[in-house]
Amino acid sequence: MINIVDAEIVIEKIKNINFLSIMKEVAKEEGYELYIVGGFIRDLFLGKNPNEIDFLVIGDGACFAEKVAQKFNINNVVIFKNFGTAYFQLYGYKLEFVGARKESYNRDSRKPIVENGTFDDDISRRDFTINAIALSINDDFKIIDKFSGIEDLKKGIIKTPIDPMITFDDDPLRILRAFRFASKLQFAPVPDVLNAATQLAERLTIVSQERITDEFLKILSSDKPSIGLKLLYQTKTLKYVFEELENLAGVEQVGLYAHKDVFLHTCQVVDNISQVTDNLWLRFAALVHDIGKPKTKKFVEGIGWTYHGHDEIGARMIKDIFKRLKLPYIHINYVKKLVRLHLRPIALAAQDVTDSAIRRLIVQAGDDLQDLITLCRADITSGNLEKVKTYLTNYDKVMQRVIEVQEKDKLRSFKSPIDGNEIMQLCNLKPGPIVGEIKKKIENAIIEGQISNTYEDAYNYLMSIKQKIVG
Image (cartoon, rainbow, N blue to C red; front, top):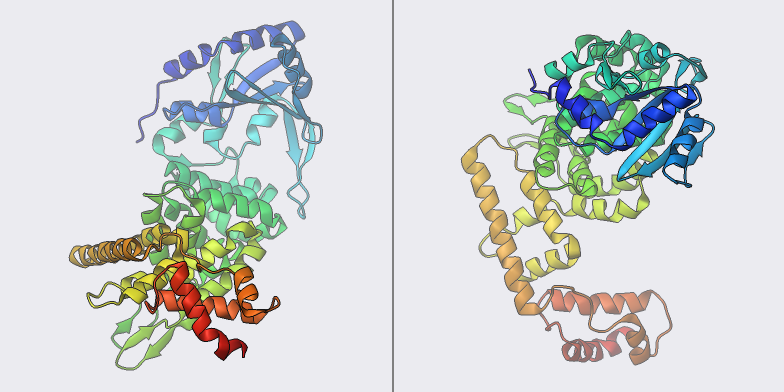
C-alpha cells in the first residue's frame, strides 16, 4: 500500500487557496455547480504541490470563467470554443474551466460527439479512477469519489471508471495514457486494463502520430521509463508506436551461444540514464543506441553472436525514425552523433592509446562529449559488479586522457585555424568541394599530431600542400 495524504489535509490545503472562496460566491450568485477534478486532486493526495487546476462547471464553462476573471480584473482569458473550455492564470496557478459533457464515438474516429451533460455523465467519461476524484466547491469543499480513486491511489493501481474495453475502444490513446501514468507514478495497471489494451492495440491506427509521439515522449520523460516501455511490449502495443524497438526483443540460441535480449538491455540503459539526466534527447539516444542490432546480428561459429557495424547502421536509421514519429528535426544530428559514437570511448581505454585517437574522439563528439560518456556509462548493465566497476574505471581513464589532450593541444573548441574564405584567398580558388578537402586535410594533420593547433603551423602546412593539390 502507498502512503497518501489524509482527505482532511487535502481539503484544508484547497480551502487555503484564497481565490476559491470568491469562485464559490460567483458560482452561488450565478447558479453554477463547480467542481475541481482530475490531476490536481490526485497529486495533492500523493503529497505533491501542483499548480494546474481543472474546474468542471455544470453549465457554460467558458462563460463562468469570464465571470470569475472579471472579479480579478483579468482580461486575457483564452477561450477554446471548439472544446468548450477556457483558460487563464491567477496567482501562479494555471486554471482551466470546462462545462460538463457526455460523449459518444464513431468507430473510425477518436473525436467525440459531445453533448451537454451532468456531473455523473462527465465524471464517468474520465480515463482512470485516480483522475476521477472530484471536490465540490459549492458543497463546502466536499470530496466526491464515485469510483474509489482514493483507494486505487493507496493500492498504486491504474483502473478505468467503466469497462476498459469501452474506455479504450472510444479513445485508444488512453492505452498510452495508462502506461504513461504507470511510468510516471510507478503504478500497476490492473489485469482488465492490460487485457483491453492488448485486444484493442490496433485501434491506435486511428490516432494521429503527433498524439502518439507526445504520450510516448512523456513515458520517456518519467523517472522509470522501463515500466511504460515493458507494458507497451507486453500488450503488443509497441509495434503501433515504435516498431524498431519491438524488433529488439527476444533471444536466439545456437548451440551454447545465446545473445542477451536487446530490448530488456535497452530498458535498463534508459532507466540508468534517467537517474542522472532530464535531457529528453539524451534519453532518446539511450533508447535507440542499439537500434541497428537486428539488422547486423550474425552468428559466427566459434565466436557467437556479433553485431558489427550496428553503431553506424543505427545512426543511419535515425532520420527515418524522426520522420515517421514526427519528432523535431533539430535534434536529429545530436541523436545520430551519440548513436554513431557510443562504442568509441570504451575502445580508447587501453593504456597505449594514441593522442591522435583521443583527439579524433574530442573533435567528433564536440560539445556533446560529456553526454556521450554519460550514455556509455548508462550502457553498462552487467550483473557482475566487478565487471561494472572495471568498465566505469575505464571510462574515467578515457575522460582523464581527454582532459590531458585538451589541455596540451588547446582542443576544447576545435576548428581549423584557417577557414574556408582564407583558403580560397590563399589558393586563388572559387567556392567548391576542393576548399572543404583542403580544410579537412588541415584538421586531420592537427588531429594526427603532425602539426600543432595554431594558425602559424596551419598556414605553413597549407603552403606545403598547396602546390600538390591546386597545381
